Image (tube, rainbow, N blue to C red; front, side, top):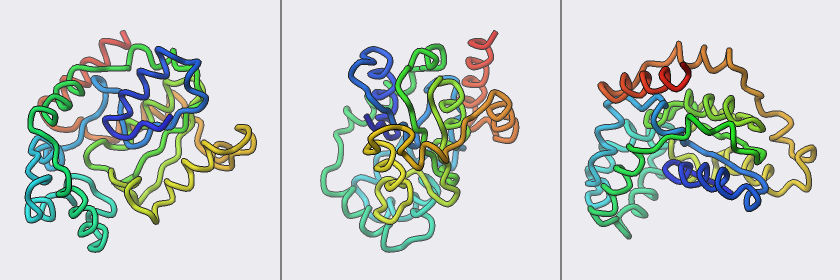
Length: 221
């Protein structure tokens, strides 16, 4: 099961509710909902505006600040991905319903119940969902490990040249976990790692970042 971005919320829920259906789990560029560290306003403000699905100009001017990585630096990637975005734009009802669902959900309280071996994949340059969220996931899921790709952004799985694709393929197709190179090399995250990642990361867009931090602290109390 591969859960990417908002799809990571679905994947986490499935792995908890139907563990017999999930042999291995990949969580890519995603977060645990409330309790996470949201992006800064420069990224989040564009998330709330679906105009990038309808206007190429708006997309090209904002996607770098929103998604980071390839969307900042690779003109051919920006052009190709922008074209794909315009082909089948979402309905406004569907788009804002997704945002509402994400804004009212959290897995912080039950991540320890996920039993599937889990590879958490993150881009080091993801302004939308900073990699500290992947550190949280990798620490709180019992059989999880983290692979961080420093130069990648939120759209890393859309880039054919991204090393994240090979990592996901290796993890999901290896006959056993011991046969998976990425699993052997991925980081086992400790509580100290999570504390340090949170300490060195801003709280994200105000007031949501502050409220999310308060929720995380309340769950830990």
